[in-house]
Length: 152
Image (cartoon, rainbow, N blue to C red):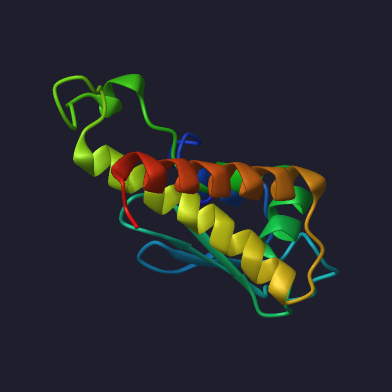
């Protein structure tokens, strides 16, 4: 097992890297590997871990993120870290269990999901029914947040 794979599998990047072939670390929090979504003879998949531990993917052959994670036996949500229940403490106001920073992080997460699926759709890439349903849920959650915050 390489040093990159010796990290914990609770991290989205580690979960993904453990399912890929020909993984090579190219820098701090950056790797290349063979893309599992197409017959990749040389590594064409770029993987990067963000400061908040999200996994970002780019296949230079043009495979969509949804295709890549599906071929690796994962789902788009597996590219994001799980947050423990106690992470969501700290009220927005006296009657809420959500802190402002948590709300913004959740909105950012939902917007990213919607953006990934929208970009795949705009590029004419196939989107699975599961990913389309998750994008719909993200859109609903964003609309609910806007309505709740009274943003016009």
